[in-house]
Every structure is written in C-alpha cells, then in structure tokens.
Image (cartoon, rainbow, N blue to C red; front, side, top):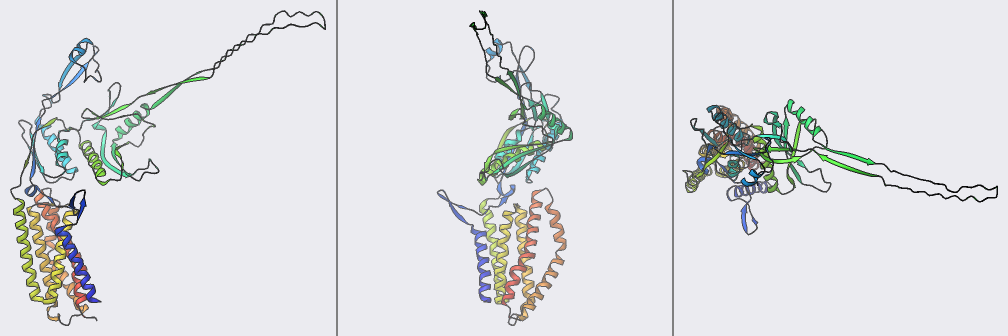
Length: 504
C-alpha cells in the first residue's frame, strides 16, 4: 500500500512537471494551442514599445450662425453652404499659448503615469522635454500595448451637455471616482450572460447636479382632450288642438352631432449627451430622478463568451481609468510609435535556461548518490517544487525580468539547501527509519532554515512593493518561492519520506 501511495505522488509530480515545461495542447480550429498561460516578460526580455507624444497643433472647427450660436451637425456643410446661410467658421486651437506651460506639461505626464498605475502597468518609463512639452513613453510589448497606446492621445475631458443647447451641465470636477462593475444580466429571465458596467460616482455637489438633471431631463407627456359635443335641435310645428278627439300633428326634427372622445398625446423629450474629448458616448433621458449620485452605463451586451467579456472589461477599464485620473491640461498626439527589440534574444534566453537546468540536474545527481533512495525521493520532490513555481509565476502574473530569473535561481538554491538539510538529518537512520524521526527532522529543518532567512524574507517583501520592475520582479518571485518552500515541502517531501519510513 505504501508503494502505491509513493508511486501516486511521484506520478503526480511527473504530470505537474510535464504541464510546466511542455504545456497542455488542444486543437483550436486547424491548429494546436497551448492552454497553459505564458510568462509575462519585462521590457529587458520582451522588448518595448517607444512612443513619442508631441503637443498637438490641431484646431477645433466650429460653425456659428449670425447670432453667434454654434450650428449643430455642421460637419457635412461645404464652404459655399456656410456662406449661403450666413454662417461663419472659426478655428480654435486645442492648445492655446496659455496652456503650453511647464506646469501643464508636468501635470499631463503625471496623469499618464497615474493611468498606467491604475491599469496595473508597473513596467514603464516616461520622460518629459520641458522645453517642447514632448513626452516619451516606453512600455512592455504585449497583446494590450496597442490599446494602451491608442488611449495616450485621450485627454479625458468629460462633459454632460444639453443635447439641444449644448450647455455644459457636468464636467470632470463633478467626478469622485470611476470603476468597472459586472454581474449577471437581470434584465431577462432567460439570459445567463454577464453584463459589464462603467460605474461613475459623483462628488457631493455632482450628486446634487445629477439629481436635478435626472429630474428635468425626463420623458414628459402632455394630453389635450376634446370633449364630446352634442347639439340637439327640436322644432314643433302645427300643434293645433281642435277638441279632445283632435289629432295632434307634431313634427320633431332632431339633429345630433356627436364627435367621439379624442385625445392627442404630445410627447416631448429632453435629452442629455455624454461626451469624452468631444466625442459622443451616449444620448439619453431619464425614467426617474437619480438620488444615489451614481451612473452605471452598460458596455456592450450580455455575453457568456470569455474573450468577448474580457474585451468589454478592458474597454470599460480604459474608460474608467481615463475618467478617474482627471483631464489632461494639454492635448497630445502620437508622433512616433516604434517597437524596440530586447538586447537578449530568445535563443540566449533558452541557452541560459538549459544551463540552469543542467546545474539543477547535476545537483540532484549528487543528492541521489549521497542519500541513495532518500535522495531519489528528495530529487523527485525538488523537481515538483520547481515545476509548481514556474506555473505560479505565470498565473500570479509576475512580470519576469532578468532580476526575476535570478530570483528563480536563488529560490532553487534555497530549496536545495532545505532538502539537503532535511535528508542529512535522516542519513544515519535511512535503513531503519521511523515516522517519528521524519517528523522530528522536518520540524528541526523548518526551524533552522526559516529562522536564518528571516532577513531575506523582510527584504523581498519590501522589494515587492517597489515600483521599479526589475526590483519588484525579483521580490515577487522570491516571495512566491519562499512560500512554496514552506508549504510544498511539508505536503510532498515530508509525506514521501514518511511513506518510506517503517511503521511505528
């Protein structure tokens, strides 16, 4: 029975190792795809996208009538049509001379950095040319890079305006926070999909404004009732009475003009338009006053498809971050957008991985030679921890830099020291080993090992909170690695050796 349990644990470790190093492949359409999540690499390994943002010199074109009012839907008007209607065209630069200041350049750079931080992007570099206002942004190249770059030109100017008069009713100053919410679609009894919402929460003053707007901008109905008119004319002619037996001729003419009840409902609707950077997001009215101070806008439609859902979440997240971080005082446009390859090629990275695995293999052979069967069980357990560590790094979204890879090497060294200490305490009793001796050796090893690395634990916890990716990558790898050494060895290594021991 013990042999079966030992064999089961070893087969489980082999399975985990195969998943970590080779993956799980399934057929998708006409190709095989690995379903195991890939590593997230930092700029020094994955390459980077370098974007230069320059201060925009574009102007906003507005068409006004003779009274100075803005003409709506004037985009399709030709110059001749503008002249015929007595309209005038005005060009207003997005960035006036008053806007182009060093303080505004710095504030714009800070807002870009805040957006990156809220999106969870820690691996970036921003540089500002205070003389020209140009901002250089360098971020890691991945599947989200294009979406991130496209949002760099968004200033984040938020407005709720009257759809008819274009009067600004609310702006950025009224926003307290914006975030993403999602949950089951409750609008349909048969729907089981998930809806994504952009949630905008307003300040105390904004809450009052929203309540007033939602009260005034509602669908209203006016009814004009026309009552039934009935005219009845009765005329009596030639009413002569001769005697009691005389015949009375009476002619009665009755004209009745009747009109059916009719009511005409004149429905008028006042609407508001929500805009970001002048682009319409939605136009709507309200069914009832909103007193919560929150607006929840649905993004897309209810869906059960994971890829579609993630797309909606990313779209809503980008909008939420833009609104939550405020309005950039300077309007920028992308001047250059280039991919810079890493100095470390994939071939060099593979060679380094093979060298590391070769060293691990030699170290495990030494373990087996020194401790025989106990060493073999310890080696299997060691490989299992290494495999789980590689999987945890991927699914914990740890960004791997060269420093992070160095952290993996240190974790493997620490685990080797732990296993060697554990086995060394059992060396003299390997032929006649009891479970009590394994438990005692395990406790002593844990105590000695973790007491000595307390300064290391404190250091890597501090490193994990550093915003510089090389340091945080090292810190996060080390934290996960040390946690795995503590949990994994008590579950796998300890149990393997207890199964090898003789019964009490």
